[in-house]
Length: 354
Ligand code: PLP
Ligand code: COI
Image 1 (spheres, helix red, strand yellow):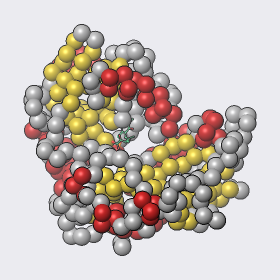
Image 2 (image 1 turned 90 degrees about the vertical axis):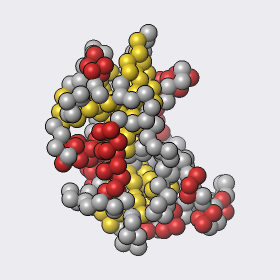
Image 3 (image 1 turned 180 degrees about the vertical axis):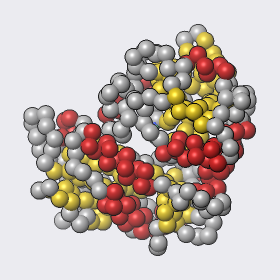
Image 4 (image 1 turned 60 degrees about the vertical axis):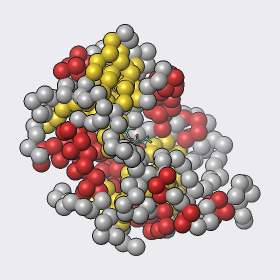
């Protein structure tokens, strides 16, 4: 039966040749299809490729009432040699499995995740931005409780789907630094809560503070540890990283931050460059002494942060304009591996045959 809703993706975007690759941002657009699997009676089905970007969902689904929902985000690149490769998808598979376990959802096998990613990318061949445009295909896996419950308990049915969206180069004219504001009126995640997994509710909780930061003119917000507001946790949707004046890579150790795949990658590249890497509690008061500060995540890799504002205090770090040299170099090295322009000694990229 045809879906009786808004037009299908094909009507909106008849040929993907119409995409202006140079103008892509980080916005949703319909593609040809997504892939969808259902967990019922204790097992995942074989999955299907679905053209309509709509779901029929039970009104009592646990995702809607009790927030039983998790997502992931990773990127797929058209490389210099013309091949299509995903960047560290297994890390996202493992993180999604941990998230699923934390909120009592169906177990998500790593191989199912890998299969779904490859399947959706292959089914949307025209949406992988060409090499040289700076774009990539953002892959968004989503897992949620679709079974009906009225009492607070885990669902007996789950949907795992993966959609894709072509996204553009975040920085067109070099890495531009931003000012961050410290959230003293809000916390992102409690110790022993769900900050270390990627549940949808964490992002709902961050919307109000993000809007407030935005209204004050700050694109990103920095959260401190919920217990004391003494240590740095992370930015709203990215990890905190810093370079010390004596050339160490420092990033917070905290039980309430999301273990970022980008951060793990940057740590390894820093080590490969001979830099010491420290993963330890980072006091807010240390920030003024750092040479460079950045926010890291899949979407942008690194956003340099050159000002951190907390109430009446402004802390300046790194160069006033542009990015500090160490973060710039880390950024360039990650991108070179992602686009297949540099060797991949750690085997981070996974080819998706077309
Ligand atoms: N921290 C939070 C809260 C995030 O939402 C994200 C990105 O989704 C990150 C950090 C960065 O993680 P990754 O590098 O795996 O994208
Ligand atoms: C990232 O990938 O860096 C993000 O911040 C993901 C965000 C859209 C939740």
